[in-house]
Image (cartoon, rainbow, N blue to C red; front, side, top):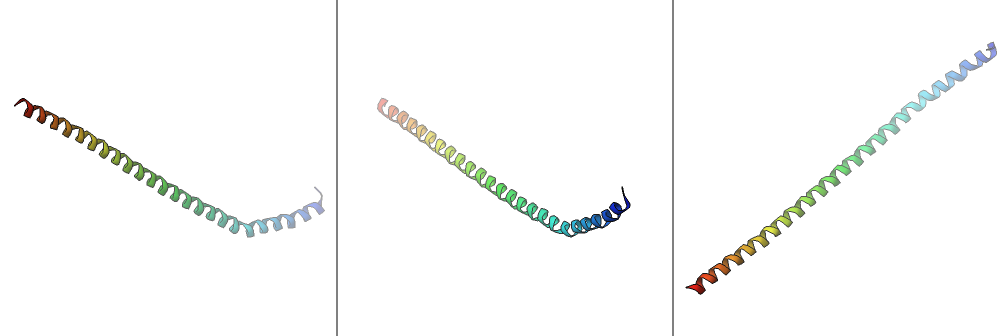
Length: 90
């Protein structure tokens, strides 16, 4: 390398270094904003999943209640038939 090239390389390197130093806070802020956006999206997704799970649990509970009700009605109907048979036989 020639002396002129070395003398020219030093200011160019220092200029690039200072530019990078000036830009680094903005890069850091951009990363932080992206991180906060990602965190808010993750929070929204967790809330949506929790809501979906709650709705699914409510639906299953309603189906179980309906099944229990229909089973209970069927048992009541069977009991009524047995009572009617007993009354007829007497």
